[in-house]
Image (cartoon, rainbow, N blue to C red; front, side, top):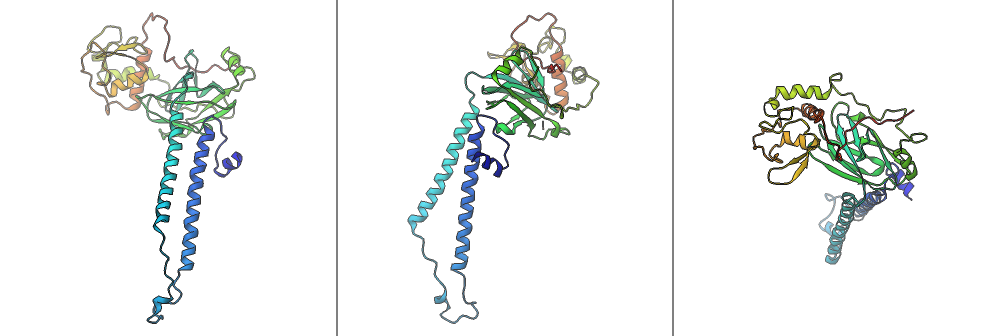
Length: 361
Ligand code: CUA
């Protein structure tokens, strides 16, 4: 039954715990719609034949009206029942859909969290234990995974067709998504929001491993485990301005835009907080509370500086919305990231530095 459904609706295999429910609602809505359309069509054909004009009116005599069949009056109760039935159907769709939405938006308590960062044109995954990878997300199957996602430049959309999962990834904002791969396997990740020249090559792969394989993977063993596809590189990025690092570009951009008139890079506070060691530090906020200075916070501070003001500094930072291009903003964030405090205490990193995935041959 499921196979037939997938074939008829041209859907990929169901790869997550959520997929069967999503497909069921999909099929239910399409089924009801098609039944409704068929009913209306049949009725229209029947009425057309049954109540057609049998004698052309210019040939008909004075009593032509009598030859016409009169349309029987539809009882009011039937009309009311029809309207209520349709309304009930609509409410039913809504209730089923809303329950699914809530289930999709509410991750279970014990999840494995992965930090996802989209940028033109690749996906980067950083795990709490410090591992990181580009393009390939390695997770255990049958275990809930929560993705904490943000974008470094423009809006992307994280889409895994087999999981029936799609969520926009927005610069300056953090969106989350959770899933549970229902079987070990490899599932393509696509970008579902046009994000520039190489949007179509912004691909990745979820590699779901059986629990025992995942343990081996964590211990650094790669033998016999699925890795990135050989036929198609998981990451196909051609970032403009290759050769010069993003951080180096950021330093120039910051100088050109006057950032360094208020922010120092040597640890001395000036009109604004110093950039040295700022990345991933805990920032005390004006009016109480703290925030981790991750990519999302740094981007937001450039675009909406009044949202989270660093305690001890005046609200004097102007917004750079419209003044800095998206790649320039990313370059400045990259530059700030490169300014680590010289002797930083080792601490629990909430957002580990992404790096290339080590896959031994
Ligand atoms: Cu990223 Cu399209």
